[in-house]
Length: 604
Image (cartoon, rainbow, N blue to C red; front, side, top):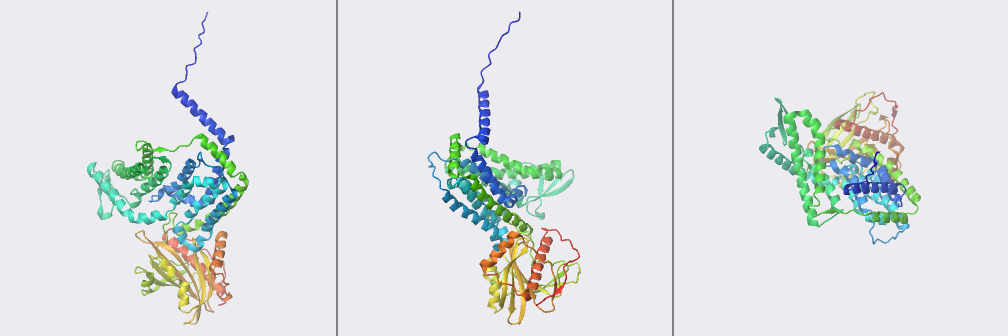
């Protein structure tokens, strides 16, 4: 006979109970996400994020693209992600918040915000030309657009709760960083090199400084072969400091603790970032000395910086408690209240969704048109083009020659300004799409003060000299460049002229930014012949150009005798900009084909 012994199930231990409770919370969270009472919160949150990402897709892609670049502003791409996390942490309503909502107020405030953001995307690029992308004005429109979307989808009370998260988006604007970092970059690089030299002297002889080859150049020897490694400003750790400041500022808005404790935690973290970057460079030199250049530069260098930065951030999060700081974590009851608040604030979600979808569609088209700026200015607001004054380009089939230098204008445009005159003439190449027997004259003013171009403008200069303006209008010249084309009568010479001019930023050999005004002039004569394919601006830029001309009073009709000359000179400016981009390495050379346009005499 066999005895059967039934053993009682052992009681679950504390760890098993905790694991079981964790599974229960995950299951309940999934139920709430799909069919729970506050599912509308998640649905509307995803809708808001999707709408904003859709409308500003190109602006956001340029920020995310910068994360993998070796630049001091690489971590600005983290700002939108941090902003979403901050909004999730701050969106819960307070226990004493009254459930008062007014949809009229939501639309009164939300719609103007969206209109203001779209105005910055449609009209300001025409008005500012390349300065728009140099200053990245589109990133100023991003928080305004986000505020309008939140107001219409969630109500004004929700916007007020997450106002810090929405305002945090302004930190993605690169202009303040570039303005301050230019003055700090050299000193920061020197401090990094000082720390690295200290380690090399006391830890091991891995590399030898080579000051004759430039600051921050070290010679490493591996297996009898030497190779140089340069520690430039982009690798000095400024990007880590900027990234840590962004992340730490976000953390400090959602933690409890005194301001003294927060400041000490912030300063200690900055010291950790600097030290870890010096250690990172030392590790690369160590790897190069022991394992060779391919392992150190091609394998270790691209990923070590991001790894070290993440480890420092993780360490500083874990060190919050020793510094007397703790996170503000909401409870489930607050989330349930938020679900009720959302449904009461915006009871008709489909109407609100239709309104924001319409604005998002217009924003998508306008934001897509900003892609053309990539020809002349980088995504972080750095000029791509070399100075036209020093390296003038010419359209295919044309030759350029400097004919004069003017020095009398330095009191107007700055003591460091230059004014060169160039002459363009057609070489007779039948493959050229632009052909003319007239000479194009170009005046190029180069200065460090862009405001002088507004103070001493072309139209004011012509009026001062007594010229009679026949017509003037704003035109698109490609690459995000907008210019002005005008026809005028030169009273002293008794001759008719057509002029196209524009402003743009250029980069110098030492990385600084200067500004140029390029002016093209062509004499209207009876025997000038043209062959020209006119450029076609995009629909959204055509709308912006039309409104810009109406607002500024530059919508006067072009006289028939100037129409062909203006068309030719605008196409000439367009080709000149493209060729300057090719010479600067930001565009590929154009494919030269036999022209299809026919030559015809001008009616001037």
